[in-house]
Image 1 (cartoon, rainbow, N blue to C red):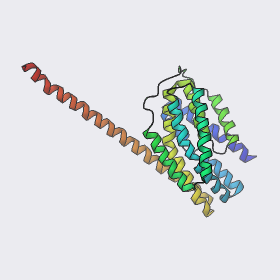
Image 2 (cartoon, rainbow, N blue to C red; image 1 turned 120 degrees about the vertical axis):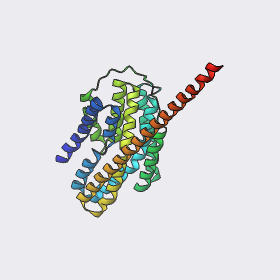
Image 3 (tube, rainbow, N blue to C red; image 1 turned 135 degrees about the vertical axis):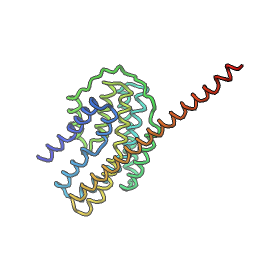
Image 4 (cartoon, rainbow, N blue to C red; image 1 turned 90 degrees about the vertical axis):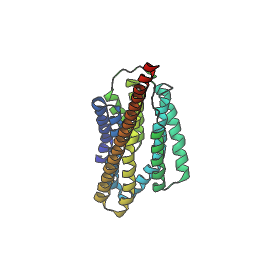
Amino acid sequence: MLFFFFRLLLAPLAVLAGTLAQRRFGHAISGLIVGLPLTSLPLLWLVALQHGTAFASSMTGALLVGSIAEAVVLWLYARLTMHVSPMLALGGTLAAFAFVAGAVNYLKLSAILAALITAAGFALALWLWPSNAGDTTSPSGRSRLWLRLVLSAVFTLVIVDALPAMSLMMAFMTHQDHGAHASSTFLRGVTRGSYSYLVAMLVLAETLRSGNLLLAFASAMGAALVVQAGVQAFDSLSVASRGATLHESEEGVESSVSRGVPEAVCS
C-alpha cells in the first residue's frame, strides 16, 4: 500500500515542480526539470526495496532500452508543432513512439548499447532542433495545473517510469496554453535534462548488481548531477561562443561601413 501511494504521488509532484518552474523561470527551465530523473530514481528505489536489487537492475536496463524511442518522440513533437494542431501532433508522436518502441524491443539490445544509441539520438535531436517553431495556436497564457496533476497520476498508474508520458503531456498542455514555440522550447529543455536521466539509469543498472542499494542510488544521483552540470557548462560556452562570433561580425560590418564612407565622399 505504501509503494502504491508513493508511486501515485511522485509523478504529480514532478509535474507540480515543472509547472511552477514554467511560470517562474520559463519553458526551457521547466523542461530541464521534467527531464531530470526526479521520478524514476525514487520509484526504482521503492521497486528495489519491494522486489530486490536484481529485479530493479533488470527493470532499469529495460527502461534504458525503451529510452531510445524517447529521443525520437521529443524531437518529432517539437517538429510537428510547427505544422499541425496540438491533438494531431500528439497523435502522430504517439504512433511514432509505438512503432519505434516495438522495433527497439524486437532488436534485444543491451543496456549499454541502448544508452549509447540514446545519447547519440539526443545529440542529433538537439542539432536538428527546429530553430523557430511557428505558433499554430492562439496562446491563452494558462497553465491548467489541476489537469496536469491528474493526468500525471493516471500515467504513473499505467507505466513505472512516466518520463516520456509526462513530457508529452506537459508539451501538449503547453502547446495548447502557450503556443507552439513554448512547447518546442519546453521539449528542448527536456532533451537537455534527459542526459542526466540516461546516465543515472546506466549507472544504476550496473551498480545495483553489487547488492548495495545505498551505494547504487547515491552513485546514480551523483553521476546525474555531474553530467547535468557538464551539459549546462557546455551550453553556456556555446552561447558565449555564438555571442562572440556575432559581435565580431557586427564589428566587421561597422568597420567596412566606416572605411567605405570616405571613399564615397571623395568620389
